[in-house]
Length: 441
View 1 (tube, one colour):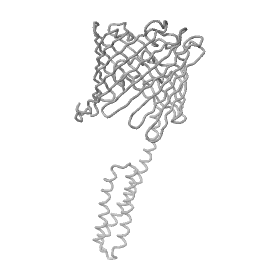
View 2 (spheres, rainbow, N blue to C red):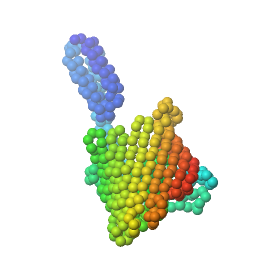
View 3 (cartoon, one colour):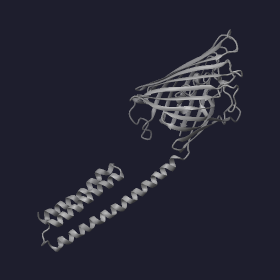
View 4 (cartoon, rainbow, N blue to C red):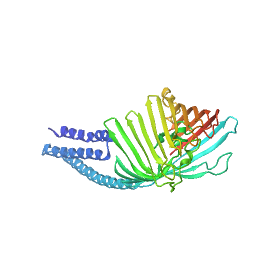
């Protein structure tokens, strides 16, 4: 082999350094460095082989050029070594910074502004709520979550002012994903709270009857217990929550259990209540949940409120069906128990499924427009006198929901009520228009 052919082969190896670097562009930095290091080693081997193949009478020019090439290969190796050391130092620093960042307190906010017009009443703009959410994980097994609500800080047509309410404030001690201990001010795991508690996530503007007059949302209480999540085969998983809490007290009315929530730090008897929920979900998004509650409401601890809830979420392509049923039995002082139950059926049609991609512009590639329909119904037996007829009310909602991004939502709803004035706003046979803007960051 002459010097010319050997030099050509050497130049081919030099050219190969560039394509290998380009091919590694999609790989990690460490992988790129490893590829580059192997190519430099091959280059050095080729230089050694070329030196052995050169004739003894090689010209001084060839010898000089080979020496320069060899020196350049050594220089490349030194640069690679220095670069690898810097990358390793940066990796250590990034890991340290990531660990510090993971232990910082996270802050999120969400809120809702509602405008409405009801028959025979003035239109209203209601700064309904602003929520501040704090969360963090100061230790790999310790975390906390706090939700603070500023409700109706200014309401048109009413007294200026509102209330500040601690909705949740608890800490978790994690043993395994399937077993975590939780204690503090807890949001009761009863019903479809994952979807209906946070106003910007709810598909309709008004809270359903089942979450307002039966399960008295926002239903929070002091308590402690366990929660967790685990797999069930390849396509199903389950999560659960079960807590011991202070429980509901004596505050029943002809409009349900809205006023039975006790103040924080209060308990009207020497007994405690039990509340829990188990949810099953598959990989297609189908979810079914079962909730239960049992606790005494009176001072003697011999009269109970016992309830259960079934909720369902079933996405079917461009259609999603959501449903909930709640039953609460309340022991009277005499004459057995008063039954209070209700349900809602909700259909959500993803209209943007039928639109062209980017229909709302390039700034909103994941925009979604929904058509929403809901039937909401509740029946309440009179707690004080079983001879009095039951109260019953139905509410129909039809509206559109626009989500330019997952963090922003705009709703327009038309509500029509028919019944016995259980809804404190829609009295009897009445209707109203509602418009809302919500955000969640």
